[in-house]
Length: 407
Image (cartoon, rainbow, N blue to C red; front, side):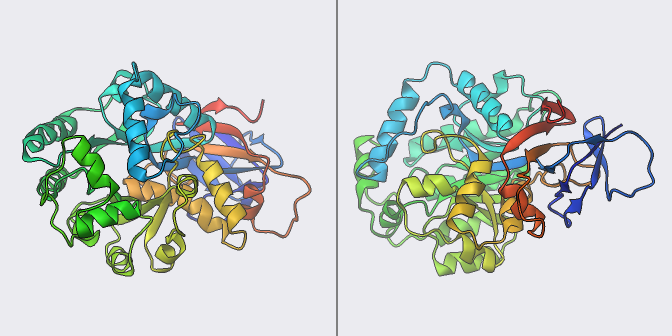
């Protein structure tokens, strides 16, 4: 049995505890209690620090983790995709990039990920300590691509995860501009049958909306160049809502990005709590999109989680830095809600909240420690104090310290 205390213990699913105690046995949390508990035993005091749940990155592409800098946005989103595809084709060992991405994520306090995989590279890695969902990415506009995509999906859902790993297998029909509506429908049916989660890049760009509504624009030009486009593949007048309605049939559905969701889309999401939106703040800013509706979504009761996207659009894989970016831009926003977006909201969105996302008895002992600034105002909320800290100083995964703050 191990016990840890610090100036603040922030469980997320209950109020913070000043000098609270976290008790851990093996890889599980067995108790969270106030400092005056009568339970005996030695306790490691981490001092002026805060103990929080491990962070959840609800959307990433670890196969790009070997990039040293993001791929700069081009004249259009389609132009950026061209360069990302070129980069992927030149990659010799995606499994090495996945290893690198997992290591970077853990070092920055992320213990659970929603990974979009374009291959089986993740299966060759000994990542038994990791937790999350591996969504197999699938594309196919023309009918001759449908059955191969469906077979890849079936095979992915049949395969067992690495031994002892807390991985859930899911599907990711990539986006409306890369997956025919009929294939999308069939993939949703497969996921429903298997009880698998689904993630879709949706309402990401104005170019996507132009393709859906008018069948024109840079994405059509790009798909034509790839030999993947024919007039009429996607009916003109299509809407984001046409993709949300089938997605609502799965137990856990992710709308990735959601940069241009309409009021009607938000209203639909608000009536379907099994659907969540993953907001990637720094990627959103890098592309110069209009204001993201994340606050409108939260006000409507829609679950919003945070993601980093990949190193193709982000300088790092730190969810902590995503939270800080939001806090710096919106200092008036509730710090506790920001932390929830980075932890429990992500776990609920991925369908992993029974294991991770909060410091709760019975859940995995995934946690991080941040060192507090001694000069902070004593009266400010604990969550705000944590976000104004000196950063991550220790990370525990499944009861084992990766970086031990007590050393």
